[in-house]
Image (cartoon, rainbow over all chains, first blue to last red; front, side, top):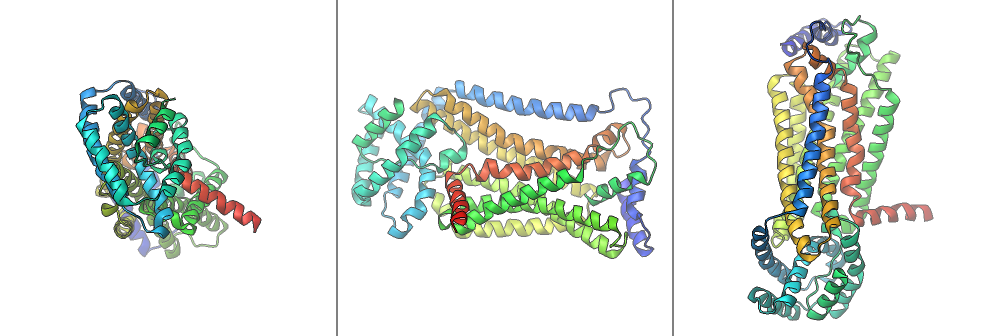
Length: 206
Length: 297
C-alpha cells in the first residue's frame, strides 16, 4: 500500500536526510494517474457525493416537516401522560426554596430547563379547563398547590418571573422555534396557581 | 494534512501527468481570513462564559468545549500557513528534524480539534436530551463536578488519540477508526435530536396549532445537522479515498478538491458559534454587556 511505502520511505529518509523526502515519493504514488478509458465523467465521485449529501439533508428536512403535520395521536397521549407525571414531580422539585444568592444564578438554567415543562404544565391546565374531572390533572393541581404552600416561593418572585417571562413566552411562541436553545433557555413561568395560568393560557391562545 | 500541503508546494516542481483534474488551489488569504475570524469568534464565546458567573453551568461548559475545539482547528490552519511561509522564506531547513516535529505537532493539533469537535457536539446533544427527558434528575445527573470530570476525561482521550493518530496516520486502522467514530457520532446526534424534536412537536401541537413554530423547529434541526454533515463529510470521504484508492482517477479527481474540503472545516468553526453559542439569549446578553462595558471604559 502506498501508505506503508511512504512510512517506510519516511523512516529510511530520516536516516539520510534529503529535501522533499516522503512527499515526493508519496507524490509519485498519486501523480501518474491515467485518465484514459474513463467510462463515467471524471468528477463523478464529486458530483455523486455532493448530490447524495444534498438529497439526504433535504430528505431529512421533509421528513421533519411531515412529522410536524401528521403524527400518531395515541403515541402523543401516552407520551403526554407520562410527561405530565414527570413534570408534576419536577415542579415539586422546583418549588423547594432556593438559596437567595443562588436564585438568579440558577434562574437562567432552571428556567431554561423549565420552558418545556411549562408547555406541559400549560397542556395540563388547558385540559383541565376542558375536562374538569380528569384525575391526573386534579392530582397534579393538588400537588402543585401543596408545593406552592410548602415551597414558599414568595409572591414577589413569582410576579417577577411572570412579568419577566410572559413577553418571552409569547415571543417565542410567535417568532422563534423549537430551536433547542430557544426552548431550553428562554424563561417561562412555572405558574402554580389557577388564575395566572388561565390568563397566560388565554394570552397564548390569542 | 501536512503531506498533502507539501504536495501542494511541490506542484510546480514536478510535472503532473493528470492535468485533467488540476489541483484546486485556494488563495492563502482566504484561509487566513476564515481562520482568524474563527479564532476571534470562539475566543469571544470563551471570554463571555468565563467573565459571567451566571453562565458557568454544565450546558455552557459544553458549548465552551466546542468553542475550544473550533479555536484549535483555526489555530492549526494559521500555524500551518505560518510554517509554510517561513519554510518558503528559507529559515527552516526542509526535511530537518525541526520541520518534522513541528509538522507532527500541528497534525496532532488538527486531529485533536476534529475529535474535540465531534465529542463536544455529542455532549451538547446529550445534555439537551437529559434536560428534556430526564428533567427531574437533571441536577443530580449533570452536576458541575461530573461535567468537569467528563470534559477532562474526554479531552485527555482526544489528546491521546490525536497524538496516536498523527503518528500512525494513513494506516488503515486509524482511518477506519476515525471514519466509524464520525459516523457513530452522527447517527447518535441524529437520533437524540429527532427524539427531542418528536416530543416538542407533540406538545406544541397540543398547546396551539401554530404550524410556524414546528416548521421553525424543523428548520433549526436541519441547520444543526446539515452544517455538521456538510462541513465534515467531505473531509472524511477524502481521508477514506486517500487510503483505499489513491491511484483511481475518479478518486484522484475528488482528492484534487482537498483545499475546498479543508476550508469547509474552517467554515464549520466559524458557523458553530452562531448555531450553538449565540442562540442562547443569556450568552448574547453577556456578550453585549462585554462589548458595551468595554466601550464605556
